[in-house]
Amino acid sequence: MINLKKNKIVILIPAYNEEKYINNVINQCIQYNMDIIIVDDGSSDNTLSIINSIPKPKNCKIILIKHPKNLGKGKSLKTGFSYIVKNNYDGTITLDADGQHDVKEISKFLKKIKKENPDLIVGNRLGDTKNMPFIRLFTNVFTSWIISLISGKRIRDVQSGYRYISSDILKNINIETGNFDTEPEILIKAGWLDYKITNIPIKTIYHKDFVSHVNPIKDTIKFFKLVLRSIKQKHSLKKPA
Image (cartoon, rainbow, N blue to C red; front, side, top):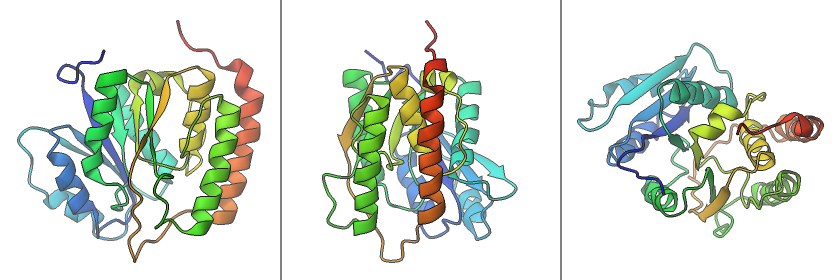
């Protein structure tokens, strides 16, 4: 069983133009005394200055990595994953910078890690969908069904960015996508390599001024391209002994 006192788990936050919420999200994360990596994806608002204005915490590090221009969420995750592997962290909890994820629920992930030692935990919002726009609910249920079928693992909320991912997965999966298709790609490949994937319930939070960066047409096309490409690659994947 994993010993959280010995293992180094880091929080990873991809951010793009999140000046309204980033300060609160980071300050809540600091309370867990875990290192925090923020990947700023070429923000053009005050996101960077707000991050830099946060006082240096005593019991953890805030690591800021900057993209010179906007590259997409998947690229931000890949940048963070690379840093995590190079600096010998044992895993990461990923969450969004827009306040959609309740930072208090990090404790749920930590309890699950301690109890079951999974390779990947997905935060599932589909048990609480009263605030979720219908189109997002429909696409989430549909894509979750497809990814579960293809990966061979029961994944209840494939679009959720609130996750725990072990560094073993980060080291052994080659991520080829660069935007919102990156998160389902990780699930597909982790499933095929028979990593232990589990789900935990989390809250659904949508602010009145919430603006989605998802393009319904372009990102749907990317999703199906991912599915087709992944099926072709399935037999070339091999989990290291």
